[in-house]
Image (cartoon, rainbow, N blue to C red; front, side, top):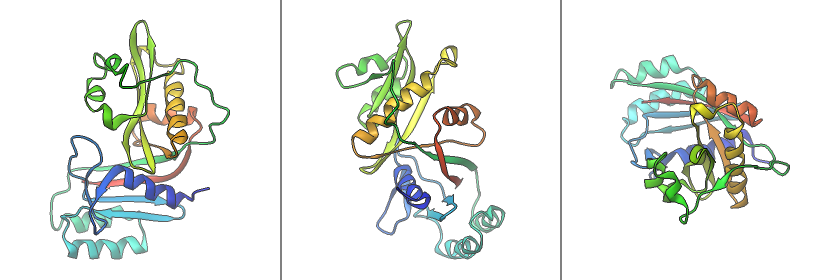
Length: 224
């Protein structure tokens, strides 16, 4: 069984592309926007910290000194960053791993392949356009339209991060649990780790995590 810290390392590798110095460069999904200035993945086993490749070395050294003492002393980290540049965004959120799925069954989820991906086009055009990056992908069709979807938001050869959405008119029917379970089972079948993360202010996403009985292994802190 992987430790929380190991899961966090897989998670950050899924989220961002890295250069040879292990600095983050871009977000690991189209259109490959610039990564945040700092990523801190805090777990009870320790923290994973990554810096944007363009961040000043002196700033990094000062931040490292703070993080070694207390990885969640964000106020001091912000103070150091803003001496050098403007900070535009700060986000926090829980990170989750999937439990054993051996006894889980999916009742309505349909696997999307190159043969039937046209189903996505009217309802999820961006997923359709970037389909090569989004597999595996599962949907639920109700009233002749795609009402729920789960696909890989980002992935590496080791792990995938889930992206889930259910049409507001069709929520409360268990569709989010259904498609996400099917997606996670397929990711594991393909030999990779299924991961899920969200923000603290996304209550619907956290509710889905509870319904899926996901296990929280850490917290993301991103400064941009």
